[in-house]
Image (cartoon, rainbow, N blue to C red; front, side, top):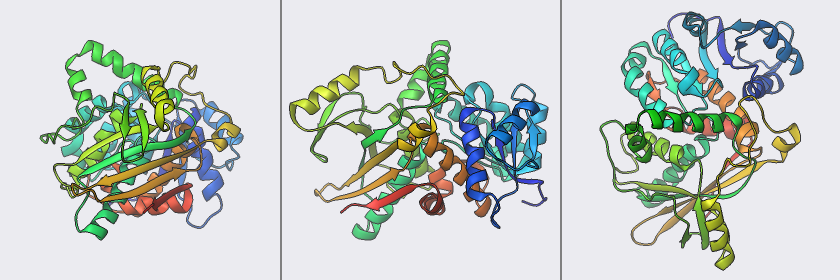
Length: 390
């Protein structure tokens, strides 16, 4: 970036639940370190920002930036002051468009926690050229949706090529174990997406397609992931996975942006593993019928206790399959609950990786832009583990 910026990273939305966790991570993980970024907290209210700064134990001189999604000029000013914006202010289809525009114009790197593919496609269409011209690296889906899946497939395929000289044309993502649910923001985002579909029915076709985020490219038929099935690769019954509709799109976009190193015929799906036999079948069928958000009372800005976050975890298996029956297995584990504890660390380390790496401007996925550099940072700092299992 040609001009010097006042800050390395601004955490926008620092007074919200997840934004506060991101800010707290910078305090606890980088406070006093020589490699600490110059960072600031941003949000609508100076008083609330000061309150959160004190609550998380940030130094009294931590810079506070007032920025409001309803005032685009404030977003423009914020984007010009920093090299990277990390935003937790969602649903992004309601509050994110002007910030993407501001960063794309200012040449500022941007990362969010978006799981809203309809809006993401709008932003790709609207800002790809502008971001390329300015050098802005716009990076969506930098939390549990979709980093463990996006990078998990990248990690698996790198090993597949090393071992077998070519990528696996069929990859299965299987949630083996998970404790901790979706965030209040994720639930609000899904609600807004459903409202958007009601207003614009053509969105439904886009959301249904695994290639919604690959403009001009349509790959082979993909499994729907909506019906419980017995999976010979794992020897268990599997049930639909609520995050699959966004994760699968991001995996295919990463492949697309990298020039299809995993083949233009890649088939990828995600399911939740249950168990074996009739018990597994019954469990999978019950999960398929359940509303995954039915029991949640969480609103945006709310979340689980520190103890619940620290007791949470996830373990995702990836199986690569070749036509001759050869398989390769990899896994990604996280040491905190997926929706908050692990997500906040992933977003923070995405910001750090954006600072430390170069790349062309454009609208990216974490896998296509940051790849192995992000895997290395997540492994070193954010409690993620990437393993080859066979």
